[in-house]
Length: 145
Image (cartoon, rainbow, N blue to C red; front, side):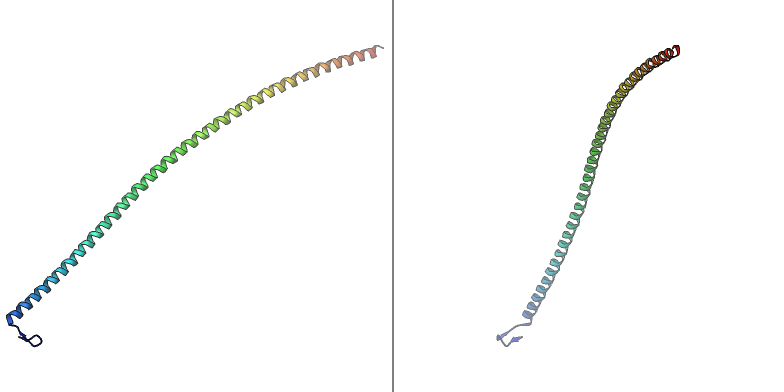
C-alpha cells in the first residue's frame, strides 16, 4: 500500500502487524478498563461492607451504652428510693417522738388541772358545808328565840 501524503509504501505484512498491534493494544485497553471497573466495583463493595460493619458496630455500641445508662438510672433510682425511705422513716420517728412528748405534756397538764380542780372542789365543798353549818346554827338560834 502506498501513502501519498508521506510518499511511503507499506507492505501488507506491515499493515497486518500494525493492525494486529492496534487490535492487541485495543484489547489490552479493554482488558485494562474491565479490570479497573471490576477493581472499582470490588473497592465499592469493600467500602459498603466496611460502612455496614461500622454501622453494625455503632448499633452494638449504642445498645451497650443504652444498657449501661439503664443500669445506671436503675441504680440511681434505687439509691434515691432508699434515701427517701430513710428520710421518711426518720421523719416518722421524729413525729412519733414529738407526739409522745406532746401527749406526756398534755397528760401532765391534765393531771395538774384535775388535781387543781379537785382541790378547788374540795375547798368549795368544805366552805359550802361550813356555810351550811352556819346557816343551820343561825336557823336554830332563830327557832330557839
